[in-house]
Length: 235
Image 1: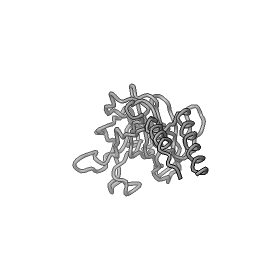
Image 2: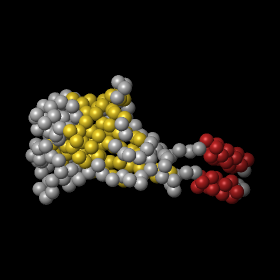
Image 3: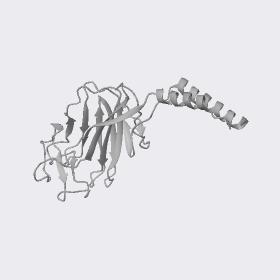
Image 4: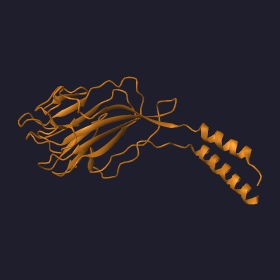
């Protein structure tokens, strides 16, 4: 069989020239470090390191007391003490200097006492997630193309002191290597999600990173691969 050094070299060079997608976690918070040093539950908690309560109240719960879903450390119930009103939790950590797109994932669960829902607003785009009473934590994912003036809100309605549970907020930057401004594909993961326009999304979670292959480059790879296969057959 005759060697194919030129074809192999050309194929390697073409693959190397493709833009590589990178996924970098730029923020994550599982709330387990809140309320130091005791790290215990607090009604109507306001001392979050990376969030602020802008309306109503929320409870920091878990770690053995008022722990609806044991084994998850500390997490947030988005409707605080009865009478304070459903809480709005706003992300307030510093993401200055980041370029989009960004992928935001978070774990949500039912209140474990009654069915209900919560609205998540990312850059002004609202999505409602509905849960049965005893739904366990599931991971959901949203994506935004722009990181400018980043805004993330978790908005709980009602005022009965029974709210949806929140944990594990993660923000990932999706960018082409050396560019910082493209890549990836995100979507909603698991559960019932109603878009702000009344539509529904019940799709499964998608991978955090999708590597785009430009059409011309993909065609070149197929062509070189076909030529190599034909040479091998003739040999």
